[in-house]
Length: 312
Image 1 (cartoon, rainbow, N blue to C red):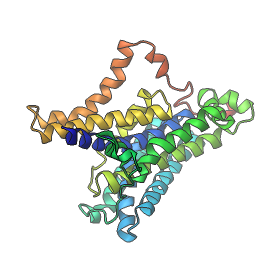
Image 2: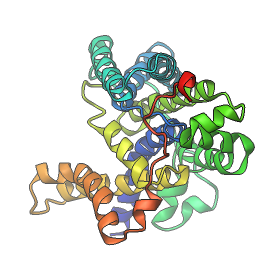
Image 3: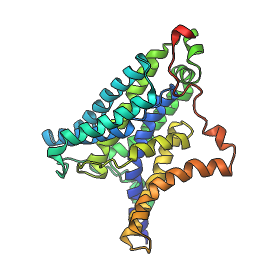
Image 4: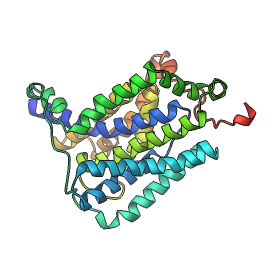
């Protein structure tokens, strides 16, 4: 039983890391008022670029860096269209999704089914990794896991809520006209935070194929980008909330694996649906049960609204 719980938690941490990283990137974009629906495509692109890179140079860090840069490049295209040209964010996001999925399938055709020749090894934390059940799951993981669950959300939270720059960032997402009148570079902040968020989405795809599922195949992302978008809402647009939400959905994913492995009398198709059913449940149920969640989950006031300086 202990081995089962340890394995389940380990799987949850690995699966949740992919979602947490993608959701954190989307938090950054949406906090400045831009909704990027292209996360799925950016993750897919990052996943295949990571595999291609480690096949050429068997270094997982180079693979992760390349995936991040690929995501950021896609993010720049999206940011140019939505922030500079001020095109519709929903349509542009869907275009980035289909572009990323199509491009990744095209350039990854020759790498389909090829195992990653380099992955991230485990880096146990001395003392803590020997704790029963939780030790191996939380403190016996690879280095990117510690970055995803501790360093990146802590850094994002500190910048967002404890610095003047973070105040400016949130002001741009709430009222860009007032922020512009106060002298803040609205366009620049939106452009670069959208790019940074897209880079993290690409990194999430790279982490997917370098650690969680170390092989590339078309459709590998399997809707994780859309789940990450939902997690941002459930997390109340907060970095730590996005990280914990990713871990929660990692647990749901691990539960479906355990059910199939132990031959629970439940259809495998239903077990595979659990993460997606959970996405719906965790958006609807909290609001129905506790009305205060409406305020906690409230989006930035200017989210999805392009800023036209000439009509402020």
